[in-house]
Image 1 (cartoon, rainbow, N blue to C red):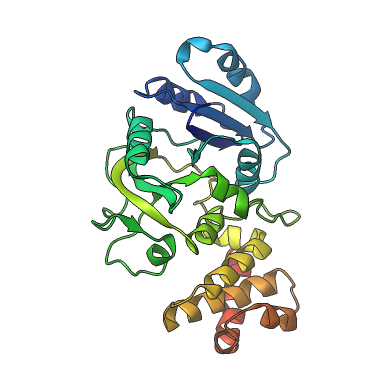
Image 2 (cartoon, helix red, strand yellow):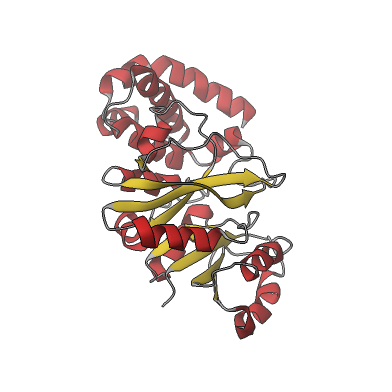
Length: 297
């Protein structure tokens, strides 16, 4: 059994998947499985992928699963359900790995990894070869919650998270709300980070390209179209220990706004949050943010 599952949730990206496939064919270490999770594509993705499933000359197995369209987080859910390797890493359909990324991951994990750690956190670069954000702190481990809350004095850009599969299975599946497709899978990484730190690997593990309609595109529209998902995310943020008052107030305002958009009862929303004082303080600004999102979303 290979050590690593590289999984790629994909929706109507038949034009981009070959680039990722060619990058995997160039890997200097082929001890991995590539799992493509087709999120209900209506283009010719299945035809593009079909010959790859039979090609044994590339040195790695390609798996293909097609499911009903449900958004990125449901692609994660499917991949986690079926993966049985020690490690997993997501490479989106519009991204691809440097030729030595798998070798770096597996060599580093073999030398340093254990069940004490969640996995590895590495760097992302854009297609021009520019690092996205600063280098990670020069230390053995970091915690993703500390990255989120600004504990480290760095510009926090995109990262690649390599996760122990058994930990993914502990926190999956993510909830799904009818009609909502924008629940950020980083939710699971933060849940894992409540118990485990990540080993730091200050190396490029992924080239990133942002596509129109992707997870990072049109954030206000995503707030409007997936309010329950964002309310759950803000509720998680507010449950994190040791955060600053600014962090709590900011995310309380967003929590109120998302709960209004989701038509959650305000009494229920108040009961569910762990930061009731900040909920009250942020209530009026949350109403104003809600109006703004409705106008722009």
